[in-house]
Length: 616
Image 1: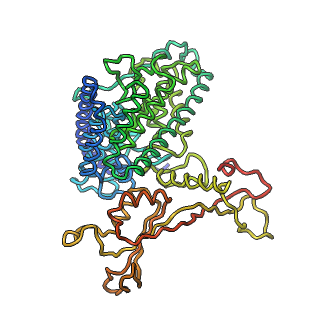
Image 2: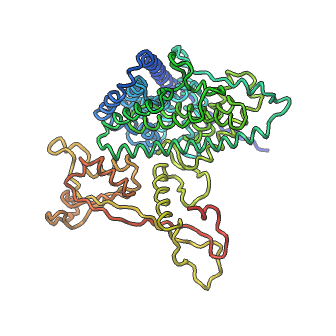
């Protein structure tokens, strides 16, 4: 047996650890301190709203202030968490430092006036912004910049909930469905632990949750490791949790598009959203679904909250639905905050209803729903399982011995699987699809997958089937194949914009230092989620009855017509033109209806189709 000692690898690993511990510690302290400030301000804002209930009627004015602030100073950071995920996937200048103060002020203002929002998004955005700024100071590029950004996400998430292990895993798991980025494990874990310790050092506490009845229900490891009847009920509830996560994501995305379409000026969207929320409160006659929902207003001690959902009479049958709608309206209209704490509320309230319906321990099912709906909406089942263990085990001695960890994992993983390829983060990519389907494209963002799903659905409704078969590509005399290639066609649109390479938004001397207009259009298309955007240079021609120009080869002719092609659905292209009218005004723009062809394998005639190919 030969034994070879390689001393180089330990030195490399040691240097890697020393480097990232030296970087992760200060960034964890900075982000933990920022999160502590945010949590303190959030608590003061909530107490102020409780002390002055009439502040709720100023919600539209608060929305106007938030809208103006982002319109004037924050257009580059409006996409929030999606911007951070995009920058991790494809580093391009980092996350602007202004994101941190803007989202902190916007979220505190949202809660001061009663908007239904969370805090995870704010903590993650502050973490990403501060980490990106440190990366610029250290002149980090490439992989190091990506790793530092992930560490910032881990620190923000772990610090805001007091769950450092879940924060580290979340930062690695949220980037791509079905794929973990283990190369950043140590920096993420170190930053999350330091961030959480910093928050605690500032004297900021976190909410505690207890599952007491599960321990007194006679289910003990010494007697029975698992109750299969209870396991069946958990699986059924997990299907409902997955469905709720789909419902939340789709309603939130659809409402965002409705607000953007009906109200072109973004400043007015939160104003209208505030008016809608006031009307909903009058309709229901309760304010239980405003704010975080973690603790009750002292004036209404019997209000529905996350804490109350752990008791049998602590929620109504439809509390989960109303919290879902209030949160979707708040965030889709332009108010700031996160989705996770409202998802905790939705899951706990739905778990409360499922537990009562099936005669199961209510607080157990509230706890399972608490994390499982979050798992389905963010496609992070492992992080949510760890979060459940971090949140519930410290407060309930012996809970792990009762088999809780197994029920927790089953609930999170089944909800994740059942939620399909949907989610609240549209920049999240499909690393490994959850199931095989010709309509699920690996390595595509959920934004694109959602558009493709809409195209396929529209084509199904119009044509009565998913794929329109054409002549088989195999010769009739060849041996029969079990599967034959087929071509499916889906309607799509193409926009052609004609301009010159020299054109810029700002004219004169100042414009010389700005980006060419065609580059601005393509960057805007990327942020808007259009499928394709490319620019073509011409060799000879004219546009708009102008002069005929030709390429001068050695010195490019900046007056020669250039064509920018944008590909997407017609509604997306119309929304893009409305949103960026300033860039496109007085340009020659041509729209053409086209077909996107999809090459798929369908079962040859005479065989039974597979379930995937049978579905529309």
